[in-house]
Length: 328
Image 1 (cartoon, rainbow, N blue to C red):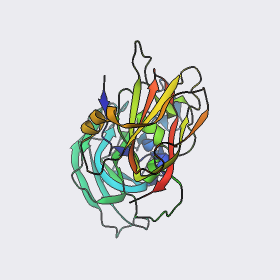
Image 2: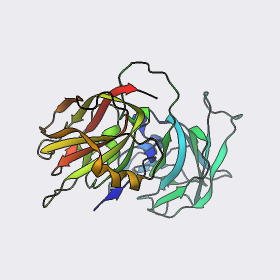
Image 3: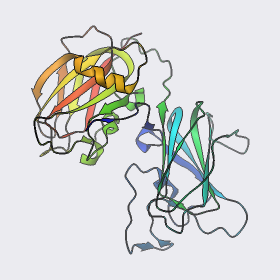
């Protein structure tokens, strides 16, 4: 079954982008830094520490005076926010009653004089549940403040949006056009049963199989695919398909298609037209736990802003790196 992913939905609170919790009013029961962990929250039955029940998230003590708790996340990369997920998984009876979000853009550490903009009004929170909210404010922010009323625990905070890339003149320098740090995003994929598609854009080497894109086992004459919008339009010199950690479940083969689409069109249209894109790499054999490098000899001088990776018949890829030069 085809699955289409909003190409702008990058988690800006992702630690591997450099995001971190820089302030919290309290985290007596559970460390505030856990709230932005990339892994799904877990529950460990019967596990206690010196402060009480161990919880996978941020949890404050019970407030005995007026006020509320909050924390501040510094985003690793500034961006526009489109959607947020306030996740209270495993917090049942100890979740906050309400939460709100504020944001700001500042090159200094926020202080009492910082002007915060409310991007999400007070919303009721329920126990053990993902709460997804659309954000209408489209300003660029680099700090987010989560307010919880009056206290309690939140498992995860996801800030989905679009990385704002400064207008840097790279000259003839080769850069990774598919790095999330350079603004790359996922347009669509047909399956991501075991691993999220966005993982292939992450910087550095994958930590394990869970830190890559992995599809379910295919039963038939099918193949899986993934489409990436490059962070910058450019010419492609080399492509790396990295299967690190995938040993008994790497794809047997892969192929690559590319396109230059000058006008803004919907993700659905991009996916629909991708079957007719030009190929820069016909089916080639892949190996387990290896970085594969392919030089672009067919369309080396062509402007490109989309790339499609087809894997046969299924399996997992850790990273996709497209090295090229930025062009206007």
